[in-house]
Amino acid sequence: MNGTIKVALVDDQQLVRAGFRMVIDSQPDLEVVLEAGDGAQAVRALTPGPTPPAHGQVDVVLMDVRMPTMDGLAATAAITAAGTADAPAPRVIVLTTFDLDEYVLSAIRAGASGFLLKDAPPEEMLGAIRTIHHGDAVIAPSSTRRLLEHLVTALPPEQLAHDADPAHRAVQDLTDREREVLVHMARGRSNTEIGQDLFVAEATVKTHVGRILAKLGVRDRVQAVVVAYETGLVRPGS
Image (cartoon, rainbow, N blue to C red; front, side):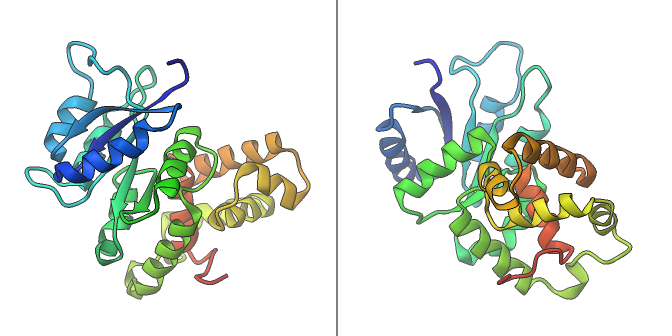
């Protein structure tokens, strides 16, 4: 089917994969084309090889963290690093629970485009897959904001960005309008919603977002939001 979002499931529990597959394949615009039981298997299937994969280009990966052979963080880093201009890497959603909070920022730094609570309701998972594929908004804002705020609150001061850090300097290099857009991004607002909030065209917001990503040296919105929290531009509960 043209326009179908192709999804890969990476989890060492077969029952978990079966449940996700049932929910995802029930949607007309989504299709599970690949399953893997550990990170190493996923890397072999999702990185370029001598012959094109039978499943074609995967768009979105749901990646568990704790798996045998290779964990989800190492697999995410390998998969996202292997992307090229001609064959971009799939976007990765890391599945997490609150007791795995220490992994979340590492996952984002490893190249993940977002994260989702493993016990999220099916409609939130489906929405996250569509959102990450279209690249419009922060993944599952209800989960993302709670997790990021919890993480930043729990981080020791030495792990937060300081004035002399490259990330802090990059934020200072943003224009006032770009900082304003970044704050709205951190609040989980989409480009359309930001445009409405700031009374500007959506195309103008997209231009600002592109410049923000370039100045911060990050690959997508979620990593930009992490920088906003770590540098103190956005405070938990704000």
